[in-house]
Each structure stands twice: as structure tokens, then as C-alpha cells.
Amino acid sequence: MRRISVFGATGSIGQSTLDLIGRAPEEYHLVALTGGRNIALLAEQARQHRPEIAVTADPDRLTDLRDALAGSGIKAAAGEGALVEAATRPADWVMSAIVGAAGLAPGLRALEQGATLALANKESMVAAGRLMLQTAEMHGGRILPVDSEHSAVFQALIGENIASVERVIITASGGAFRDWPLEQLADATPEQAATHPNWDMGQRITIDSASMFNKALELIETREFFGISPEKIETVVHPESLIHALVGFSDGALMAHVGPPDMRHAIGFALHWPERRALPVERLDLTAIGALSFRAACDQRYPALRLAREVMQEGGLSGAVFNAAKEQALDGFLARQIGFMDMAGVVEDVLTEISARPGHIHAEFTLDNVNRLDHLARDTARGAIKRLKARKH
Ligand code: NDP
Ligand code: MG
Image 1 (cartoon, rainbow, N blue to C red):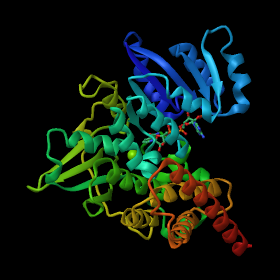
Image 2 (spheres, rainbow, N blue to C red):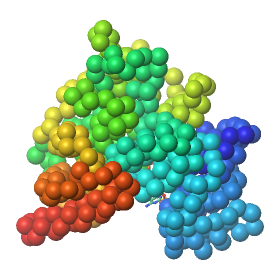
Image 3 (spheres, protein in one colour):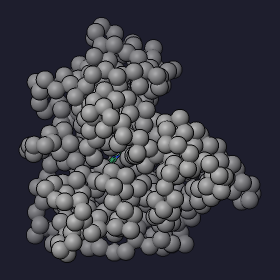
Image 4 (cartoon, protein in one colour):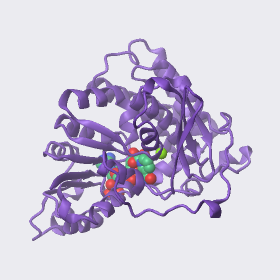
């Protein structure tokens, strides 16, 4: 039986992962399931899938989790340390689907055990891609992409020589506001930003789709994952969200990956790789779809894309700064401290401020330095948010 752990089990990706695993329970032994605040769902998942341990990230909810699991024989634990400890339990395949930089430590620990890490948590690749890849290599672990665009690129590259790749194009839906007039974006609310035209995802990534910070992270993720130089990585708005990515080769051919917007495809691909197995996803009816369309992603509407290019140019630890500043700016937007279009301004201020201080961005690439810069970026972002608020009042 394959030993499986799911980090972020109570989230959108976590639930889709358990949906697939639950269809063939005889094939899997569940090691660890983790969640955050949703104890009722975590306990329900644990009772159904019978992991060795269920962990909540929130130490204040340990008693609730224990009570909810009473009599089940399933161990309960809580807190950041317990999450990392759960990742040391031997597993063959580990889903990394915590949202945000909190996914980095457990992901690294799973790779240190030699596990195959199915990576939905793009933030860890953006903040510490080099560390993730080095850790995998050193301990015989492997990282498989779960982000739909990167799964698509991975699939288009099977049997190909990476040296003949001329360009990689990742598509973007354009998010909730793709058809809004530019001047209205400043007044967009968190509720408006948290609806997605095509995909059903967690709240944070849905808002990141509207601002294109999600695509910005994905550009950097592409660079880190496949080692492709930034000038070969493009993005294009594709409102139908049916083509997830295209890879262009030196003979001019473009290989596109086409599929319905259902994350169970990319999750299932990573689960069964290197085999392909039948998956419960919709089969596309091309004549019903009729046409696919594309338009340019303009930097004025989506300043996050320009910032991502600057981060790739700068290199070093700037990905960790970018991701942390973005997470803090999103918190500020959710708390209604700043407007929708202010998020990019905050992130830009943080990047400018921290890269001006010598020695930070180009310090040695260690986990300690990634964490240090993550904290510094969040502090700096909080300062920028305060200044912005003061200016508006
Ligand atoms: P959700 O918000 O739906 O779920 C996030 C999960 O992480 C939940 O289990 C949540 O627990 C848990 N969590 C939240 N904060 C913490 C924390 N500080 N420490 C530990 N666990 C925490 O997110 P998604 O499933 O949408 O996204 C998960 C990851 O996958 C993200 O990195 C996202 O970018 C990526 N991704 C998602 C896609 C999608 O379609 N949803 C597509 C491609 C990538 P709880 O809910 O119990 O509080
Ligand atoms: Mg994606």
C-alpha cells in the first residue's frame, strides 16, 4: 500500500486530493492529514480516511480536535512544530497544499525523508525554489507540480529535450476583473475579488487571480521548477481556461495542454505518475466549446507581472521577499486597510526598500535566511500599509 500524507487536507486542493484517494482506499495507507481552523472537516476526513495522525496548525484548537476524534484511535496534534513533525513520518507521496509560506517547512521536511512531494503550494517554490530542489536531490526525494499550468508544462515536456525549448506560455483566466474598466479597479472589494469566472479555489488564490499575483508567482515558479530563463517565459490571457500552458520548441511547434478547469486532473496526474490512469474529470466537447480566445496581459492592469519579472532579474532571495510582501499586502486588502490596486504598490515598496539594503537579497540561500527575509518583508509591508493609510486619511 502506498503511504500518503495530505498537508492542507481541509482546503480546496486537499479535498480534491482526498476525493481521488477515497475512490481506491485499498491502495493507500494514510499517514498524516493536516488542517488549520476547520476542525469539524478535519475530524470528518480523519474518521473516513483513518490516518495515523491528524494535525491542526492552530495550537488553540487541539482540545477541539481531540474531542472530535475521541474513541477513533487516531492521534491528534497541533501547532507548527507538530506539522513539521508529521512530515517526518515516512510516506511515499505527500500532498503539499497548505496555503502560503507556512507550507515551506513541512514540504522541506517531507523531501528530507525522500518522499515524492506533489506541490500545490507554489509559495514554497517562489520563496525557496533552490532549497526545495537541492533538498530533493540530496535525499532522493522528488517534486511533482500540481499547479495546473506547471503540470501542463511538465506533461508537454515528457520525452522532449529541455535544450530545444524556445518558450513557455502559461495562460491566465484574467480573474474576476478582467472585463472591468481600469479606473474602477481601485474600488474593488474583497468579496468581488474572491469570485472566479472559471475555477473553484481557496479565497486567497482566487483574489491573487484577480490581481494576477497568482500568475506572477507562477512565472517565478516556472523559472524555478524547470530552470527556464525568464525571457523565455510568457503569459497570455485566455478567458476560457481550457488551455493551461503551451511549450514552444526550436522547430516552431507549440504543444498545448487542454483540459477542463478541474484540479483533480493535475492532482491525479501527480498521484499516478509515471502512469496515466482514468480520472473522474469532464471530457471536453470541442464543438460545443467552438472557439478559444487569447489576449495580451497588460502591465497597467496587472502590475504584479512586471514585479515578477523584476524579481526573476534580481534573483537571490528576492522571491522570498516578493511572496511574503504579497501575503501581507493581501492581508491588508482583506482587512480593508488598503485598496485592490494598492497591493502591487506595497509589494513594490518592499522590494525597493529591501534590495537597497546591501547583503539581504544576495545572502546565502539557507532556510534561516529565507525565514529572516520573510519576516523582514512582512514588517516592511506593514510599514508601507500604515503609510498608505495615513496618506489616505
Ligand atoms: P485553501 O484556502 O482552500 O486551503 C488551504 C489549506 O491550508 C487548508 O487546509 C487550511 O486549513 C490550511 N492552512 C491555512 N493556513 C495555514 C497555516 N498557517 N498553517 C497550516 N495550514 C494552514 O487553499 P487552496 O486549496 O486553494 O490552495 C492551497 C495551495 O495550493 C496554495 O498554495 C495555492 O496557491 C495552491 N493552488 C491551489 C489551486 C486551487 O485550485 N485551489 C490551484 C493551484 C495551486 P483550514 O481551512 O482548516 O483553516
Ligand atoms: Mg495555477
